[in-house]
Length: 83
Image (cartoon, rainbow, N blue to C red; front, top):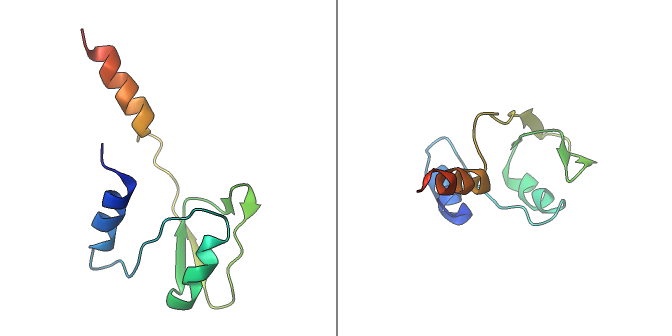
C-alpha cells in the first residue's frame, strides 16, 4: 500500500500537473484557486456541500473508477486469501 503523501508526490511529479494538495477541510481548495484555473474533482460536492469555484476557475468532474478497491478492501481481500 502506498501512503497518501507518496501518491501525491507521484502525481505532482507528472509534467502535466502543476500542483497537488491534500484537503483537510471543505475550505482548503480555496487556498489554491489563486494558482489554478482548473479544479479537478471526482464530483460536484465536498463533504456534502456544493463545490463553489470563483470566476475564472473551471470545475472539471473526473468520475471515480468503480473497479478500483479501497485500501481497506484490498487488505481484507489479501487476508482472506492467506491460509
